[in-house]
Amino acid sequence: MRHFRYCFLALLCINTILSFSQRPSFVSDSLDNYIAKGLKDWQVPGLAIVIVKDGKIIVSKGYGVKDIGSKQPVDEKTLFFIASNSKLFTGTALAQLEYRKTISLNDKVTKYFPDYQLYDKTSTELVTIKDMLCHRIGTKTFQGDFTFWNSNLASREIMMRMRYLKPVGLFRQDYGYCNSCFLTAGEVIPEVTGKSWAQYVTDSVLTPLEMTTSYASSNDAGTKANIATPYTTSYTNKLAKVPYDKWDNLGPAASILSNVSDLSHWLLFQLDSGQYNGKRVMPWSVLQKTRDINIITGSRKSTVFPIHFRGYGLGVYAADYNGRQIYWHTGGAAGMVSNVCFVPEERLGIAILTNNDNQNFFEMLRYQVLDAYLGVPYVNRSLQQLPGFKRDMQEQLSTIADWRTKVKGMTPPLGIAAYAGAYNNQLYGDMIIEVKDNKLFARFAAHPDLTATLSYMDTGEWLTEYNNIEYGIYQSKFSIRDGKVQSVDIKVNDFVEYDPYTFIKK
Image (cartoon, rainbow, N blue to C red):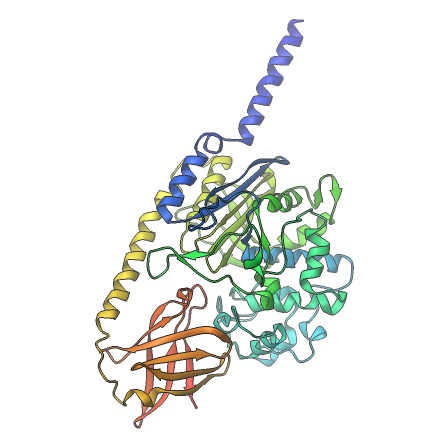
């Protein structure tokens, strides 16, 4: 009898330890207050989070509001753009097709698109599906995205314009995050299956995982009943509603809409070697293929987080974190940022969705949860990062305020009419500049809903303000030679693309 009692007590202790390991004190006692403060500190209207551990959903809930006007609360079914978290769905679909011997990830892109070209002939001849899925064609991060992001270009036209992306790095050596690469890889799917990328992902991933309230198409996002409203505080430090992205022409890179309820299924699938609800959805080797590192993205120890090495697989990053192997990706859409993370050794998964794109709380919350489960000494990650964010925000506001003081109604050197006309950039296409109310007014052929107002500054530059704040507030400079306007450099938000575009006056 005494032996039984000891066994019972031992089992009770083990169960208590296991229960604790599933729900550390930060998650059980502090999570709600931490998130409530984070939403206030970072001006995030709403957030949804799911945590899965050891095959169980530990947390799945919403915080804050999906719309600051209606005050409707976020819940676990509230839809958000998951943006680039769509990429692993694309990588998984293509790895599945390789497993079925429908394709090889080492197939040349020109096998499926004979007229496809990159900037140089050698890269064109060598580039494979795998190269596209791991961002190693040598272009700069986000290169071309001003042209492609929310544009009216068809998917195949985007692919054709990739020939104008001049690399800044070396093919298969230098990493540069490339959305149009993922589009190109995803467009192989209809070539070999007869189904669109969206339909194939729905049939092969979303439906088997019972992700019944997720969508692979997002152009009609605004019509969904329970969807968060997108906001930003960029350039104003005040919450401003922004338009929903229309990304179906870049679908394989970014267009999935989902919620934390459905993403729990995706995480459980990832953490159970390709099974969901005890049923085999995909072979384990398919998931392994997506996680194999194909290019190194970093090998220097982080000064902030317990991370040393980072790499990229097929739509997912891989790294160490306090001695465990973690996989994750972030997603950034207009007005929404998200992350999805899983730690197979701990059978731990996290997804966080938010509706303000100008904040880093969504990432600090992920690190805070990782710290709690992986034994990292507690540091308030949100408060650790907030001062730097506020400092950068204030610098941005001060710079813009200084620019505005330089708009004094002065006459530009050539007279304002000389700057009007038709302009062209080889990659982007056409831009028209007209004169209105003693200012210049720019219209963009690939973005019919986008305009910019250019006001002359006493520095000889022009203050450029877009009708969609997501594109930013910047200075533009015209090049003048022999008394004639030659070109103008146009800059947009780094969130879209880092480098300015030079438009040549026709």
